[in-house]
Image 1 (cartoon, helix red, strand yellow):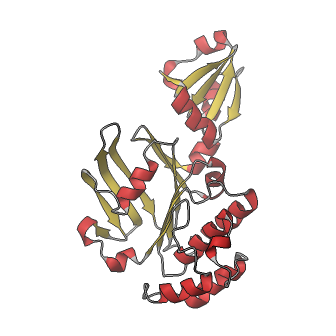
Image 2 (tube, rainbow, N blue to C red):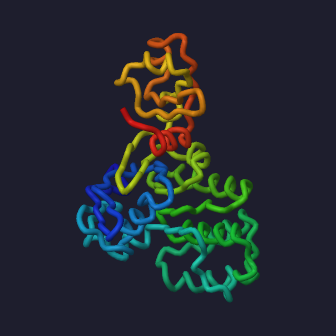
Image 3 (cartoon, one colour):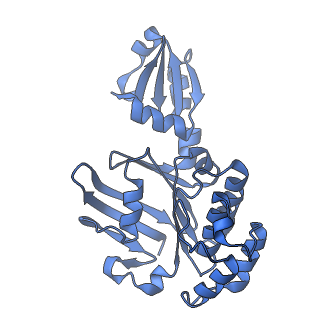
Length: 286
């Protein structure tokens, strides 16, 4: 079993939106980043994977079990974190420990308290007194303390300060050091995914635009910045998308080194994941 999660042909229709034939997988031992602008279908995809929304068609396979085969034994190996805490505000992390001991057969009290200490979370303080960052760190501590083999995170670092985000990203990297563990994380903070993700799945208007290794996007893609004459000289098959900025053109290419050889006088910059996403969304396609 090479994949912790396989999504195949996932479709979900609303009156004004369609999640259209979404397919991708999360290899074991990897972190897969799900990107796209708000309303692109990221949360619908995650909710459908988790069974929180009924899909119209397609299959979901988690830890080797498909759809109706996904039982409580499998669900207990999935750590889920959403943007926002769902824990009772009147409880403390210490009292939560006792609650989860009765919920999860594989609850690891020692690991939980170790994570509380590592994340500087007070065990006796009520959750209602926690900041947003503290609540998110607590959610992740819980997700990592019940024998999870797959983490599914929806905007888990949204709205957090850079120091807290960095702490959380370190936990993700530590988690997948065990190659039987895997993570699917949706985020609009693409710089976070550039630090930790192995693969990037880009969803736009309910469709998967690409599903590629992060390093291919970071090190192969590029942006040609040129004037009108240079733009007119570019061959159509070399252009993924483009847009005009004032008096210059920005052109996304899939292989910047090859483009540099073909157009030696062109200025070609490396492309960030953010650059690539923006040019797909706002640019024109050939």
